[in-house]
Structure formats: structure tokens, C-alpha cells
Image (cartoon, rainbow, N blue to C red; front, side, top):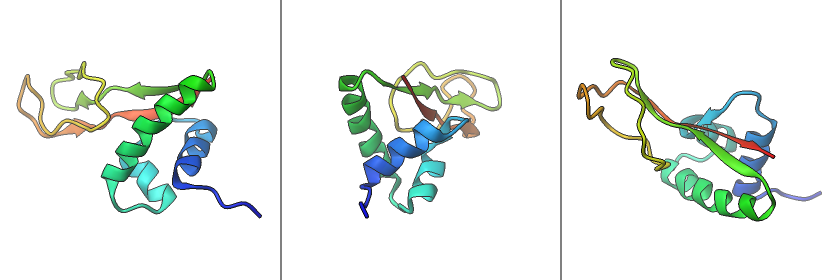
Amino acid sequence: MRWETRREKIVSLLTESREPLTIEEIAYMVGEDDKSKIIEDLEHIAKTLRREGKTLLMEPARCNKCGYVFKSLRVKPPSRCPKCKSEWIQPPRFTIRE
């Protein structure tokens, strides 16, 4: 029996999931309380996948109040909308594709 590392679990989740997942959903599913570790893992996974010919896709964060779509490709979700200053932000979502 082989044990999967946290990063291997994340890759499996994102590959098998029908819908893109948020950092919070990923953290819950792999049993990790520290979301900063998941962010660090996603950044590393993106580099690893490129070598394998796969891609980590990110749906950007979006303001639920005014609809502003964040242009930044940072993995860490923004805290407030620059347009309307709302804190009601839909976090970025991730998936893996060939």
C-alpha cells in the first residue's frame, strides 16, 4: 500500500473533480487546516505539472457585489474589491487539465 503526499492528494482531487475547487475546499478534502500550505503546494504543483504537459487552471477571484474580475494571477485570494471596496469576494478556483 502506498501513501500519497499532500501534494499528490491535491493533484488527484483537482484532476478527478468535475468542478474547479477553492483553496478552502481543497484544504478540507486533504485534511489541512493551514491554507497557506495549500497555496504553497498549488504554486509548486503548477511548476511540476508544466513538466508533465498538464496545466493548473485558475478561475480568477471575483467580487460578488459589483462583478469585478481580479486580473492578478496570484493564488492567494484578495481581501477587498478595488472597485467597490466590498469584502464579498468569490475566491479563485482551481482545476487540472491535460
